[in-house]
Image (tube, rainbow, N blue to C red):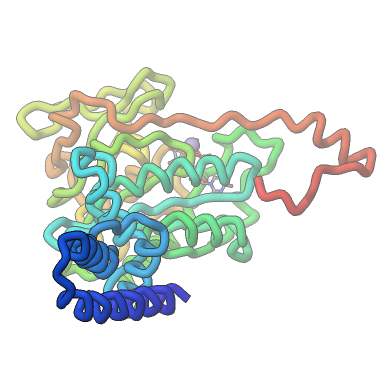
Length: 352
Ligand code: UGA
Ligand code: MN
C-alpha cells in the first residue's frame, strides 16, 4: 500500500516536471516566479522521503523498503531514526548491535505468577538499552506460555524462549517459605544446554545469570562485557546484609564480605558474577544441581570454572553496587478470591 503511495507521488512529480518544461518558454516575470516556485515544490516532493523522513507515510515506506531488501530489523531501523531525530541524546538509544563488542547472554528462569509480566517488562526495558544483549528465558512450566511468548516477541530483543519444568520432588509449594527449595536450577541448566549447542566459542561473549525480579544498572553490563575468566562484584540488599560480595584491591579480590554461611567456597549471590563464554564452553561439567545445600548453587557452579585466586574484580574494584537483590512483593489476592468464590471472577481474558 505504501509502495503504491510512493509511485503515485512519483507520477505526480513527473507530470509537474513536464508542466515546468512547457512553462519555461513563457517569459513574463510573474511566470518566472511561478516556474521557480513550481520547480522548488517539485524537488521537495521528489525528495520528500529524505527531507521529511518522519512523516508517517515516508517513515513507513522507508522502513518498508528496508524490510524488502532484507537488510534491517525493525528495532535497528527505529533506533537509527530515533538517533537521527535526537542527535544529542546518545545515551538514550544505545547502539543495537556493534560487531566489535562481545555479546552478553543473559539467562533468566521465570515462572507464572501475578507479578511475572510486570517483572519481565521491567527487565526487557532495561536490556533494550544494552548493546549486543541476547536474552535466554526459560519458563518453569510443562509448556511455553503465550504470555511470555508475546512479551518476548514484542520486547524487541534477540532471544531464545525455552522451558524446563522443575521436578516435583524439589518444587516449591505455595505454603513453603521461599527459601525451602532451590529455585531456577533446572531452568538455568536448560539455558546452559542451549548455549553449549548454540554459542560460538570463537566469538567473544559473556554469560550472566539474571533472576527475573532483581534490579540491574546499565553500568553493570559494561562492567562485565570484557571478562576473561570470571568477574565478580558486590550485590545490594542480600544475605541479610545491606550488601554482600567481594572486597577488592588493584583488580584482585582480597576478601569476601558476607555474614550468611561464610564458609561457602564462593560466598556470593547469583547476580554477583559473569563468566567468559569460552571458559564456560570448555568445562562440560559446569552446571547447577538440586542436590547441593542451600546457598551453595553459585559455589557449585563456579568451582568447576575457577579458583578463588583467578577471579577478576568488577564494578570499579568492587566499590560500587550496580545490582540489587530486590524482590517483588507477593500481591494481596483477597478480593479476587472472594469474587471467584461468588462466581463473579474478573475477565479471564485480561492479560495482567
Ligand atoms: C535467591 C538467589 O538470588 C537466586 O539466584 C537463587 O536461585 C535463589 O535464591 C535460591 O536460593 O534458589 P530469590 O529472590 O530468593 O533468589 O529467588 P527467586 O527470585 O524467587 O527465584 C530465582 C529465579 O528462579 C527467578 O528468576 C525465578 O523466576 C525463578 N523461579 C522461582 C522458578 O523458575 N521457579 C520457581 O518455582 C521459583
Ligand atoms: Mn528474587
